[in-house]
Amino acid sequence: MQTDNFESSYRATEPSRGDVDSLKDVAVLEFGAPWCPICQGAQSDIQTVIREHPEIHHIKVEDGSGRPLGRSFRIKLWPTLIVLKDGTEVARVVRPTGAGSIRETLAIAEG
Image (cartoon, rainbow, N blue to C red; front, side):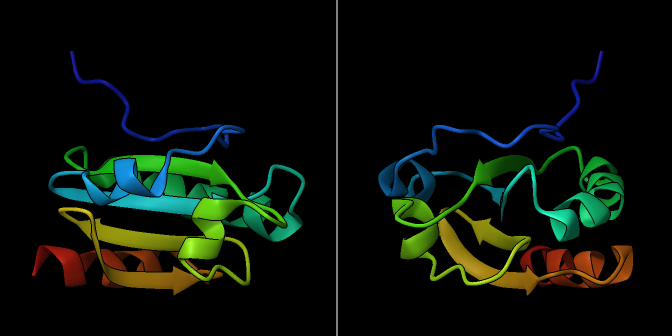
């Protein structure tokens, strides 16, 4: 049975930067907030694309003022998707405007 790789809820407790830097393979960090209307509006497209790639580890992180992980990635707007390959940022998309922009961003990591 295949497990679902899409995290539906934002993690209130974020992973450390060291944990993120040590991730293997391709991962997507999604920064946002559960009350953010732009984040809510993007969820369908994010979910669709993440589920098309079951090999990708999806980590949904609740961001906000003073949150160290978001600050370490210089997050300014939500949602922001950071694509990592072996713990290193290879691409990002800020406020994706559809599934296509998310797919294009993921293609950079897979290419």
